[in-house]
Image 1: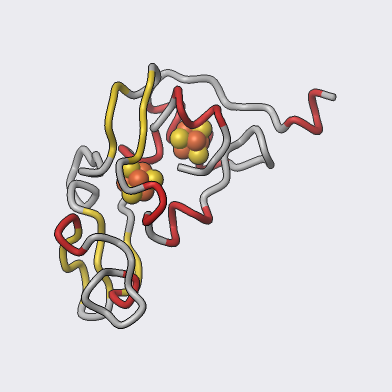
Image 2: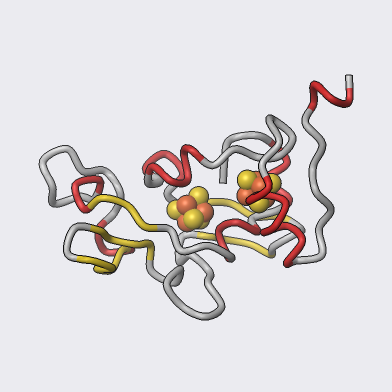
Length: 115
Ligand code: SF4
Ligand code: SF4
């Protein structure tokens, strides 16, 4: 989930992809910030957000109803994949489109293309 407002009525990517990242991003590591209690081991060097490594993913930090109103309860401390994932109304992002389509939501159009 990126920072733009479209995400606040979406949340699809938080319940579609596995969200994995280097263990050093989690609390317990010297510079960690992602709450480690919301993570699980995915690989010897990687953690993932709980709930995202399963057949029907949904991150434990996601609040609300997908496609209606959602929020990330660790937004300020979310891991790097979430920070780097850009909503489709900022720049074209087929991964955003794919997650949204899974929930029956239309692809977003980058603002520059609308203007
Ligand atoms: S799928 Fe796209 S619009 Fe929806 S929350 Fe993720 S980045 Fe935002
Ligand atoms: S940490 Fe937040 S932004 Fe990242 S997948 Fe979970 S709910 Fe979404």
